[in-house]
Amino acid sequence: MELSSIELQGTKGTPIVTGDRLASWDVKDDPEGAPILTTVNSGASDPMGISLEPFELQFRDFAERIGNGTKPSSAGEEGYQALELVDAIYRLCRSHSVVALAKQ
Image (tube, rainbow, N blue to C red; front, side, top):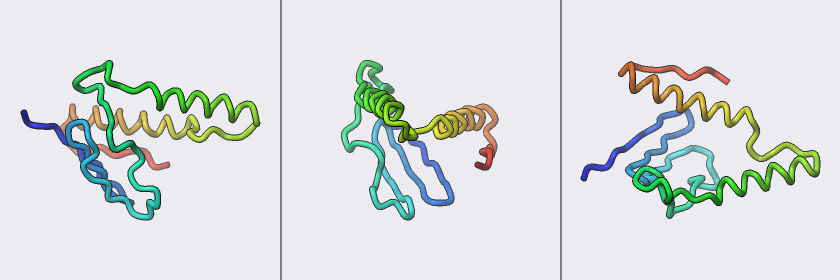
C-alpha cells in the first residue's frame, strides 16, 4: 500500500506528513520541536482512533482562562487561520494550481 504524503512549504519551514505520521519538521527558530506527540492515532484509517485528549485539554484551558480573565492559549483567530489553510488545500485539490493564502 502506498502512503499519501503532504508537504507544506512556508517562509519559516516545511513540515511533511506521510500517512498518519509526521515524517519531517524543518522549521526555523522552533525551540520546542514538532508540536505533536510522536505516537499519534489517526482518524484516516480508524475514526475511533482519534484521541479526545487534545480536545479535553483545549476545553480545560479555555475554561481556566475565562475563570482567571486571561487570553486562551489558542484564540479564535488562530482557529480561523487553520480553517483558511484547510479551505486553501481543498481549493488547490480542485483547481490543480497555486492557491494563495490571505496575509495576516
